[in-house]
Length: 239
Image (cartoon, rainbow, N blue to C red; front, side):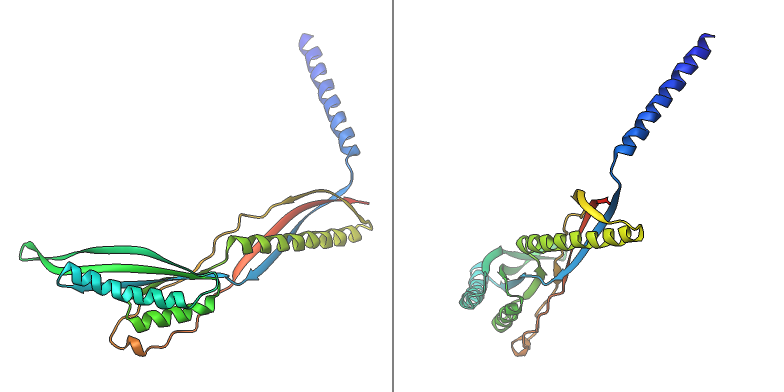
């Protein structure tokens, strides 16, 4: 008997709970939920390249002097270009003895000095001039060539894309409402559902070696496009 009464109480409680849910559901406005999307392609607005001088001589002094002479020549000519928003910095300096293993022992083969100059600029096309300077000067290596979109440009593109995504969401909602013989009302909620923007550098590798390097012309550089996307979740009232 006690078990029957308990079961009845539980049943009545469940029925009451379901009644509350149905009542609350009835109070909710009719709505349409959509995902608005946008995708923009943008060109990189920043580029960089690394010019490396590596000189090997019999003495440490000769190696340092030889590398410094070429490095200063490159730095001076690159600085004279007055690149838009340009940055010229030393990224590496190594001066050490060169040893090789011969007949069960390490034998000195002289000294080498390695200096790297990192060049950055806003205008991608101007890097061709930097490459030409490095080629004429006889750099050992040109590497780490890359193009990328700055954070400021990504933010600007993302804001523009978000606006487009919101408009896309409204177009979808209006099409759905029309199919239901209804109309789109005010926005009940909106949220950015986009993934964090990924850094998309476009790396390339270059090396300039050989006796004919002074005769080589600088290549025409073209940066690939980067993709900026936005997704917004919007809930509209359905009239």
